[in-house]
Structures are given as structure tokens and as C-alpha cells.
Image 1 (cartoon, one colour):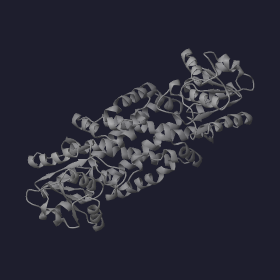
Image 2 (cartoon, each protein chain N blue to C red; image 1 turned 60 degrees about the vertical axis):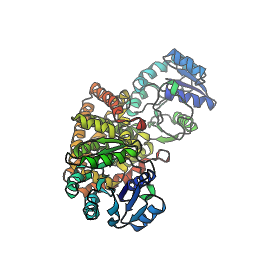
Image 3 (cartoon, rainbow over the protein chains, first blue to last red; image 1 turned 30 degrees about the horizontal axis):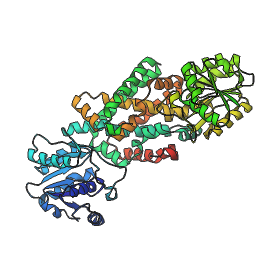
Image 4 (cartoon, each protein chain N blue to C red; image 1 turned 135 degrees about the vertical axis):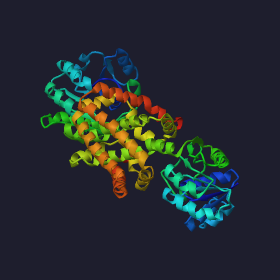
Length: 284
Length: 284
């Protein structure tokens, strides 16, 4: 199959490596000519160009740009595509993307591979990035089943765990387990920094250990990504934040009222429920 | 030196192993006779007993019981001690302990070794548990300097990083970096479980990955420990929780008002500030 990839960063580059090794012809497009050159040299793609016309021969195109560029890229891409070509994307938010892109191209299947590393760019591209990780597909009722089937087959060949759901379900789920943790964790760092006594702040900085490190990790991550989550998954994240604040308020009230029995019950529930969110490979 | 240890769990047992290897005579007391037997067999102590009278010969006694038992233990211990014996404790909250224990014994130095593992009990005892980790001592102005000096020397010989501060400063610092993260993290788990649509909850559980795992880790820990923090560090934890809620409310308002510039600035600050809380050995 001829597979096009627009955006040759961590995700696009890693897709290229795996898809080539599965025997596909991979055509890459990047707006950066040096990236195109590197992608060819490193065997990430068979051919690359800064020009979307390269993808006229593609059967399936993976759009792997930052989320803000997905719709504009597809708008520029469609005049060059064969009429039965399939487009899929890898954006981490789905409803906002699917809504805008669906009218642009009939054969579009929204997707989100839940894989990544702390690094980005083509230098971070690696084989087997998707193996064993979830890959969500969000077709609509109107999406041609043949297009869904082909994207599904490609994704399964990467050895991903495939999940199907509506775009809105995806966005609510990732709001809980991916976007809310960033905001909760960032607020922790900010609250600690609000300590007004220098001696106490310095002591806290010296004493902080693995508990603080882990709870604060995602809150100390890429600010642009955090804003992107909030912009494109606005409604779901906001709902999750309000639920979170409600839970926090209840806990604060229990501590204020010294209701230790209720607090212990609450912490027993959280200990009991946490493992349901941990797959075997991410267990502590 | 003759060193007594009351409570032969993770901390008390690990202290015994290191102090014996440094050439001290270590006398252990546990209310569990099997623990006493194991401690002798494994070389954790030189001698052990269920009876506090064993510690009549001790120059320094480390009280390593759960925090609720510290004051009652010391009350029972003092009739048996030599008049110049020194008592120190290892409780993770200091003001509440120091306040009650100081009137019971003149030579008392509050302490808190910031070391641990996920395991507990004598089976978890290990050598070098304290090496490279912070160990806070909280003497008062009225604490005899000679007693402070001896405890400090012992703690330094464990290769701990020693910090001195007032009990209240300790409690405020650990509220930020140890106790607040537990409550923040537990509320995250609880909020996720509040999702009312089963399909979305199940999807969230399937998609959760390292970000959720790390942010939720300390909130899924021992409920009794969580309640203990809240009970004994009530005031400082409550203050930290209110500051945290204030930061969270500001973030929620920014998202509500779609003030992306302010949100990005906030997340840039948290990324910038987080490393000041990470020592080299706990960097990601």
C-alpha cells in the first residue's frame, strides 16, 4: 500500500519506520526540507518532499501535524488526492478535529495513538512506538465502513490495542486520565511556590522526594501542550475540573471538621479504585 | 554507644542494621515477641525484648513506633531510663509530637528521617536506607545542646543529609511536598470515578497511562497514613489545601474564560519552578 505521512516528528516518523518495515511504500511530507532529507537518509520514509503533491499516489494519508495544523493541512491536501484515498489523523483531541475535517473529505477516520515519549521531532522517532499501546479510532455513523476497516487493519498491524468510540467519548475519557492530571499537577507546583516564608519554601524544596516528583511530573511538562488540551478539549476538561473541585471540596470539609472516619473511607476507596486504571505494563 | 530502638519495623529495623554495622550495641524493643526473635536472628539488633526495661542501659533511644504511639511509649519508657539518656523519635509530623513529649523528658530531640519504601515491617528493614536522604532534626531553644549534638552525630554517621528547623517549619514543609500531594492525588482518582457514563469510565480506565499512574500514585497509598497526616498535621495541611484550591480556582477561571495566554504563562511557571524541588537522585 502507498501510505502518506504529513508531519515527520515523533509520531509521524515512528509510523514511517514501522509501516516501511511492514512492506508499505511510505511517502513523507514535512515543511522542513532538512527533516525530509533526514527522513530519507534514516529510512523513515521511501520518499519525502516539502510539497503535498507527493501524496497524489497515496492510498492512505496519516496527518501527524500539531493539532492546530490538522484542518488547514487537510484543506491543502485534498486537491492533490486520488478520489478514494483515505485520510486519518493522530490528534490527541477528536471532536473538534472530526467536526471540522469531516466536511472536507468523505473518507476521513479520526484516530489517536496513545503513545509518546518525553522527546519530540524526527530525532525521537523509533520503531515499535505503538506496540502494546492503545490506539483510538473515532469513526462517525457516516464514515464509509471500508475506510474504517483499512485504517483499523493498518493500526492493528502496528500491534496497537484498538478502541472504537465516538469523538466525544474519547475526549471525555482523555480529559479524565490525561488532561485533568496536567492541571491538578500544575496547581500542586504553583501552590507549593506560594509559600511565603522563604525558610519553609527552601526546606520543602530540599525535602521533596519521589511522592512530589511523581505527583508534579505532568504539571511540569510542555506548556504549549497543556494549553492545546484546554483549547481543543475545552468542554470536557472544564467538566472534569469542576468534578475534581467538588471532590477536593468534600475532602477539605472532612479535614476541616476532623471527620477522620469519612476521610479514611475516602482514601480506602481511592486505593481500591486506582488499579482499575492501570494496565499491567504501567503498574507501579 | 548503647542505642535503644522501640519499634522494629522498616525504620527501626533499618536503623538497627546500620547502627550495629557502625559498632554500636543495639537493643531493640517490640511488642511482638516474634519480631524480637527475628530481629536477633537477622542481626538487626544485639538483643531484643518485649519489655522496655531492656533499655535501662541505653545512652540514646530511637522511638520508631507509629505516630499515635510515640507519646504513650515515651511515658512508659522514662521510669526505666538512665537520667542522662537521650530520646529521639522518627515521627513524620513534629509539632504535635514535640509539644507532648518535651514535658515528659528533658533530653528529647525530635527527628524525621525522610526515607522509606512501599513495604513496611521488619521484613522490609534494609541497610543504608537513610544514606543520601534528608533527616530533619527539630530541637527547641530549650533542648540541651549536648543531646542535639549526639543525635546529630549519629544521624550524620548514617550518611543522611541533616536539616535543622523548628517543628512548625518542618510540618509546613512536609504539608506542601508530602501531605498535600496525597490529598491532590486521591481527589484525582475520586473525580475520575465520578464519571457517570459507564462506556466513558471504561474507556478512561483502558486509556490511562504513565501520566495518570504517576499523578495518582500517592493518592492510592495507605489510607491510615493519609489520615495520620491529616490528624497530626491538621493546621498546616489545611492551609496548604486552601492555597491549592485557590490556585486551582484561578486555573479553572482561565480555562472558563478561554484566557490561553494566562494559562500558558501559568504552565510555563510550573515547568520552570518544578526542578527546584527535585534533587539529583529524584530527577525524572
